[in-house]
Length: 119
Image (cartoon, one colour):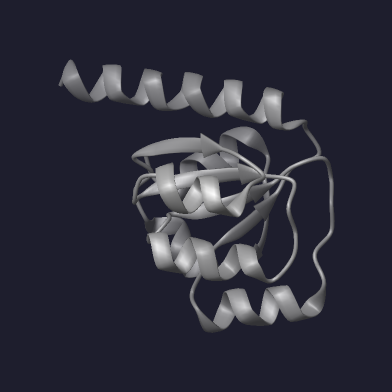
């Protein structure tokens, strides 16, 4: 599934790096601990978090993540958005909780993989 499809279906608001929306999403990971994401989040995943400081951009770039979803309607500071653009990290926001967002991401990815296998 493309990140753009996920963003459209979840009504996510893209706040940085629109060109990353064409990337494939291979999975998802929910965590607010940067060390946990560094240790366990797989490349190509979308990261769901409430963190909104500049270090999220570095982690996403280092792990080659497809994108970050900031939950709970949180807004990011301009410096974070500038760094995300510079490192080509796609960040989207959602008014939903991490629980709701993760459930919907899981369902959409599961359905997407099922439809790919039946082709």
